[in-house]
Image (cartoon, rainbow, N blue to C red; front, side, top):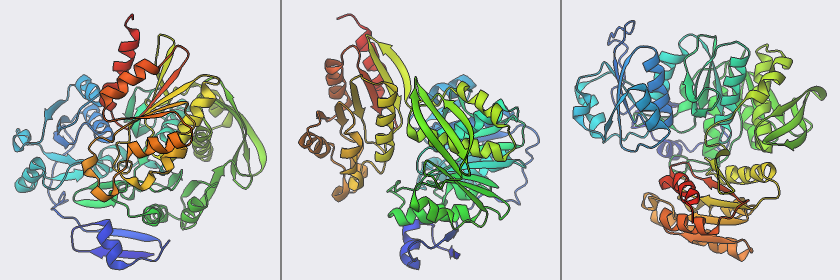
Length: 514
């Protein structure tokens, strides 16, 4: 174990350059903060409702935290710049006042405690006012530990892919088993129509994000959680704005699994060598799940059925139970395997799991059918990483066999705006029949010599004989999509943002008589 302490502002890149870490070495990041954090000597009585102010409140996680705190009786306010459904609608329904933009005056009346989201930069005027006033403040993970987890057992789902769906499955199965879980998840769980739940039971499900925590704490968020049991779904390169390369990403996950207590347990995807390499650094028991024969929890006989999948589970090579999950795709069988393994280890009877699983409705924006208009099925998905794009398209093929599949793709993440995945997207998108690609929004945020080219992607797809078109903006893409869509088609829209309202605008256009 390598323990790093640094008295300069915390920065992953500087730390790795400075300490020249050997490839694959377990790393424990112990990072100092660039500002005065919440002072434990500052006594604030939270036994009665007090005023908390959230910076970046419209982010998926921060909005969930706002809901948790509101339900617990605290007075909540917040501020943000970018608001769109479903989070803007959600906060409005809770009666939470959201200030548009960041200004010092948003802190009047003065809150007792501020929670600062990871999208907030150090130069943010509202954050600067918090520092000037010496207001107690926490990061989002710290707030979750303090107000949601408390003395309960956290179940943390980590990994590059599948965190949201796996966490949602865990939460639903715990609830169906009568265990009254709390949870905070990075998507709307449709069974609860929320991405959080306080609950009163012994378990809290948390989506363990590898992105950094806050401008004053550059550790990955999941390092601030302290679970006894965790899931590791995958390890791939992502978040190019904070991670240098795949080794850097693997080091973060290695640090996470090495923090699990010796009496804990890690469920890890065993089909990927890198996941096994990372999981091997855990000091606790490790059980692998997957489709390969050497997995402790193995999925077999995967068969599409309607909107979901039938599959068998073998435990240590012996048949355990057969299941149906109403989620399409091989990747969702893996997500389900992980959740089933955790529930089994928590003592939930397999027959109860078999009965509850078909009632799982899914997660918003995960292969979600949002409309059937004029004979066209419209599907919304959050996919943006090439692996997720490819798996989503394969799942859509299985769910809608024999139908023409049109895909509209917006590469808008910090990573997809860079050219690291320029060639990977060619193979990822090739399963679609027609491919419409938008110019990445805010492309200027990527280094000029490292920018993704949607036009190049389309040219590469065309060279492979794939019908693909490039569009400089959403308006031109929408016009083409309307012109190309025909009755019987499936239109799959993939973006991690609002895509300038593409889906409602497209559905509205189809609904209008020609």
